Image 1 (tube, rainbow, N blue to C red):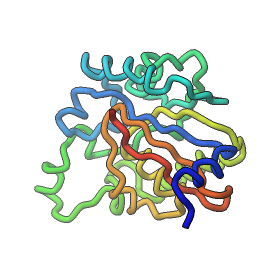
Image 2 (cartoon, rainbow, N blue to C red):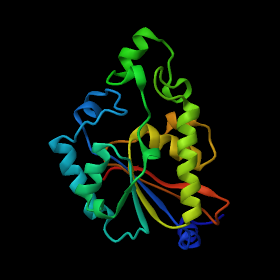
Image 3 (cartoon, helix red, strand yellow):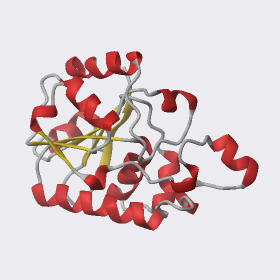
Image 4 (cartoon, one colour):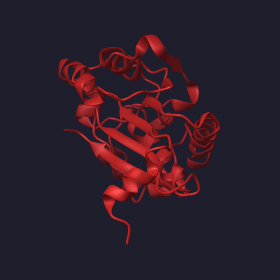
Length: 203
């Protein structure tokens, strides 16, 4: 059996992709679905975004990518990376359509059994459409074959994590992400073995 230390050494030469969920907003605090609405960070969200600086200190990235959303851009800026950032529309949060600004509890009251990662959002994006965006981002990452720092939103990043492993978007429901969390996508022994090296670190 390979020890954790050995595994880390074997993967040291392989690129790692850092994923950062944006800081807290009023809507994330209340559980309202925030897709394309541009909601700014709360004071607590700004403080947590600034605290990303020491958490990411010592890491080197060949590129920084951000969702165009205000909350992702502001988090990227307060973390100290916005000057180097490239805005990528494919990193936008799931388009919730008719469910924008509504909580899951409210949705389930009118549509029992609904599951975003399986059913998508009426008037917004299907799971297949979000999967296609995630796959385009992954194709770019693998083409770059270099360490990249990404700022985006919860549901999109959860699909991205699932797709990195070759799982269907529905499996993204199992990958919870808190605000200003850091996750790392990478490889185990070689590029044929994509893994999640860290997930939802909030310390």
